[in-house]
Amino acid sequence: MKAFGPIPADFVADPQQMLLIGGQRVDILADQAGDTPLFLYDSAMLTARAAEWRAAFPPEVQLHYAMKANPFAPLLAHMAFIVDGFDVASGGEMAAALAAGVAAEHISFAGPGKRERELEAAIAAGVTLNVESAGEAERALAISANLGMQAKLAVRVNPGFDLKGSGMKMGGGAKPFGVDAAMVPDLVREILAAGADWRGFHIFAGSQALGAEAIADTQAQTMALAADLASDIGEAPPLVNLGGGLGVPYFSGDSAVDIRLVGARLADQLAARPRILRGSRFAMELGRWLVAEAGIYVTRIVDRKTSHGDIFLVTDGGLHHQLAASGNFGTVIRRNYPIAVAGKFGAEPQEVVSVVGCLCTPLDRLGDQVHLPTADVGDLIVLFQAGAYGASASPAQFLGQGAASEYLV
Image (cartoon, rainbow, N blue to C red; front, side, top):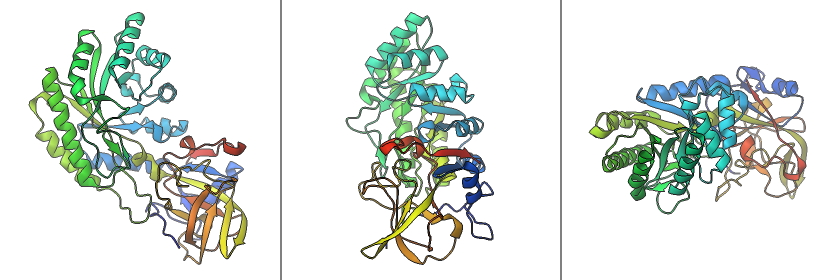
């Protein structure tokens, strides 16, 4: 038997032990959808999550949504009302953010390898480009000159440190992301000399960290780096994007990050920040922390079989919708996401089973030797923490399966 991650505390069942999301029964929502698998996102949980962040962090820090975590259009429209800005990483995401009603002045565009047409579209729309290299800055300036428009350019900085304990390290050492810190002052001076609208720094050291002290320490280093760079340049950055880093508990033994500690430490750092940063604004960009817990993935058991004494629950879903939960999205050692039988939520576990998908590959495993209540053909299996890096980060067309339905409730 292998443990699985903690189920988010906000989920409850009705008196018949059927899991609820947004106050509605999961089985009824699945019937209304007409088919499984499907993703369900709770709009009230999204709103509550943003409110939780605002209660913990200083009011002068803006909350940005990193939409790569979940670009589902109805979810984006909801997020547009509860955050201060969107951070995008492609021309497609930029178009989706604009379509969701986000003003261009509240959108920043990061990511290496931006194509000419993406740079042109961003400049024409008035979106801030977080340039990732001197070459990208040069191309953006040339395009803005051809358009007769002033480009809004921030510089993404590759810091000399990373976020300790982070699942994905975005800074420190040789990286495809951002401009090495030592090269930033000269680049900013070139941007200013060219007459561009310099929008500040984007400094992202890592993501998916659960250690509050490590996150706070990294933010302190980020603040110090921004001050040093600004002093060298001789001009204050209008905005310092501190990145994200707040993780969510996916696996057994994980605990939620203490955002109150991070927020309190950041408040202290802002109060004591160097003079050159006194007029600067600050932001954090969060993706999975805002949306992961608000989403579930629902898949139906189509077969129950025994092989060499092991029980397999075969579902109509799989890694083509939930690549991360299958352990094939950057995980070195496969561990189990939080999982449940929707119609027996909270019931005592009775048997050890492996929950597998419908794909013809041994990689398609959603729950490995997990202890669950007895389930049979027709029952619904739910994977939690499915609001981030699920539908859009999985190979939906693998083996011709197709995408899962998505609904905001």
